[in-house]
Image (cartoon, rainbow, N blue to C red; front, top):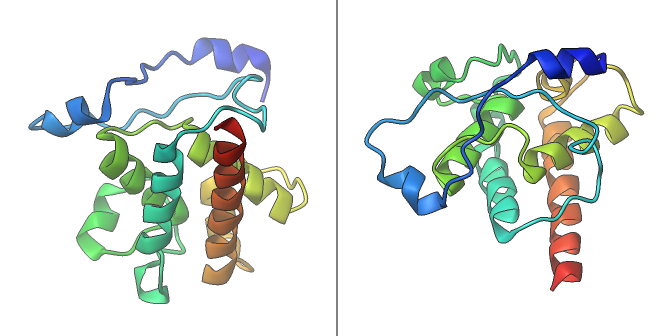
Length: 161
């Protein structure tokens, strides 16, 4: 994707305190944001919330009956079925932990990086969706990228202290 595409995309990111997001009666629609070179750096500072997001996503995808292997990046229908793709599990986990969805949150970026590593840098239009939907991807593969991301975040959190 060219840098000019990043400039043309302008979406707001809620950076409020987690408790503020939980107090809202209705949540705004999740915002999808473009990446940038800075967001693609692998050593971004992490917080305990990043670990919590990944832990919750792991729980949401703990068994095959909970996994939607046909991601369309529309998560409302997943809520009705109780089956979530990797992307939708991360979105739900992010909302539960932070009170709002942060598309480029470090926890989610780390999963994207784990997908890149697991697929040896294979080019995807949408890393989370396309990895989830690969015919060869199994639930164990999805669980593994979550575990790798969580291990990396936990190690950085420990090093930051």
